[in-house]
Length: 152
Image (cartoon, rainbow, N blue to C red):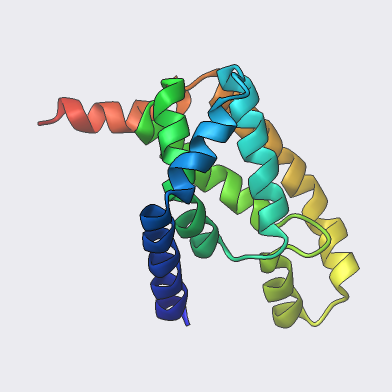
């Protein structure tokens, strides 16, 4: 199933590249002249809503070709943004009421989806705090990669 998702996303990305939709969409979004924090807020909200309907890998594969040009134009470090996207996607997977991981937990425990959503809500808010901290202090996410670069 994951292979089909990746194949479909690769086909969609290639089709968007040939038709020019990707660059037109990136220009349309950048035409709003949002500050970097506004762009991050929009991306975060977009992924949270998308997390209600898709699994994590399909979200990342389907949206990366559109978002990366905007991120580069805004001046974000791509390593930092990758870590940020992983946090946001994982946060989106437990978004009540229809987060993908909530259904996995329901299948494992046999409990009601609303009960699991209520249990996941404090974790969602903790992940929101983590995303805000990583956005405010990028050194939190870049510390380990910077030590790996120094080891070469």
